[in-house]
Image (cartoon, rainbow, N blue to C red; front, side):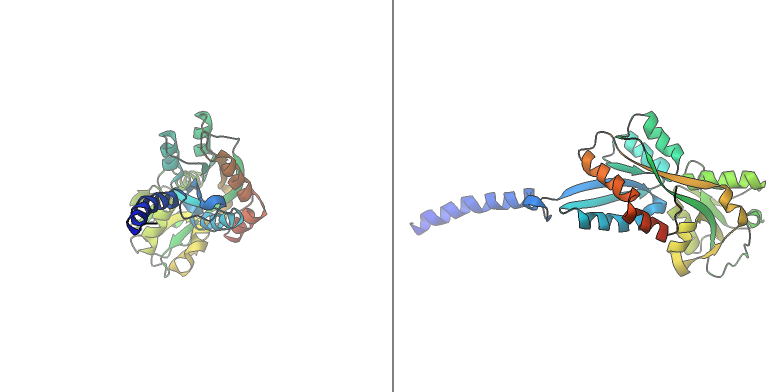
Length: 257
């Protein structure tokens, strides 16, 4: 072929080839395509669901799991407003019920874990918090979740049960925000979940209290109706409920439903 004609032909073919590569993304599944599964999950599930997501990807070639973690009530609002979630995992049944009532779940929610409260303090526990009742001490810099967030609702129920009046300096929209204020030294104490204290390691001191078992949060999970990845969403739900998912959750301190 004439060299000039060959150069002209390559100039036309190469851009087309480049466009084809982009459309097939950087995945490793059939045809090189990657399918993204978007999971909205309660903030208290962050470390466990990230681990479960990696194990799910390892068993599903060409699938990438992307998470949006936050307070369950905020996540519900986002889904109600059309956020592209394929799966929702809540830290309580109350917020999952909002999706059910709006006919936004693709299947009946399934309970997959439970959790209880624990007090987190800085490592040296400078305020000497030893009980839930101590959270009412004058001058204590206490941080808790807002009442609409599952950990906040559980904290309020516990306070009511024990006749303790809490006067927090701050109410946060997720349990991870409460924990961050404790680990940064902005608070003397925060009420979080047992699993958050475990995950924080040496960054906090956990203060248990005997009444914690009286208020238990149950975590439900469900595919979100209308997702483009409804079959894959169902498989992820089954994976969380299965042996692999349950082992990850129980190793992190979650209870069985």
